[in-house]
Length: 291
Image (spheres, rainbow, N blue to C red):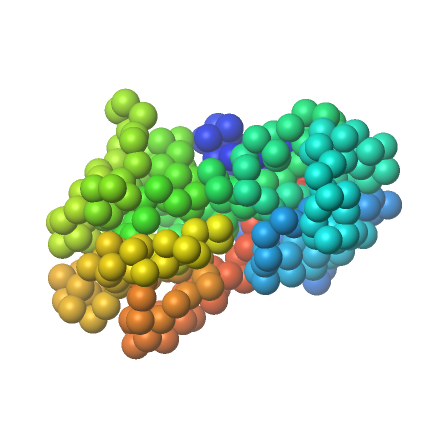
């Protein structure tokens, strides 16, 4: 693995290798005999704000022996309009790798091309691959295996997390259902093992995992009222769970009373915050595999 730009770009074998190594990283935290990033400096280039992504990458890089330089738009010439390829060609001569959290998928891909550095997509509008690898790891940890499992995503099926789930299902072969209004359902590649429906009850019936995300992604704040009205029927709440007893997951931050009710969130907080912790272990696996 040279870069992690998307789930789409990974093979089933590469995903499985990352999941297996994440388990090793979690079991051995604090006792790593090897420091694969020793002597390296990595740049975190974030155009979008973050809590979990920034902290987990900074801690992970340091635990693997590396150093971190954090750059927001205000800290670099990107904020003043410098082309991403020029920033990439400069940093390619100065640091050893880059983690990028931004809007356009093309920016991450262009950075990797011009910097020639190991490059990690820490979120774009198109995909969120680090989140999905951590989520797959969490499901294996909680349910023992992904084989034969059905995962149901509820809400905005066009968001970056849903898109990455689609490619994970295609690569690994588990069943994915997306419950969303017709206008929020994605176009699917032919033959994908995925059901898109506006029938939430059909989608959740018998599912092993119910997964949700915020209804208003960064950059779409002016659509808040409309999105809330359209996606309101797709909340995870007590009545919905009368039909099933699945693992409940949320990639955070959570807006209680919108995509998930307060009581259901708190009852499943142990799983949700294990999921958040697993970002660290999954990302340490990714960083190691890029060496």
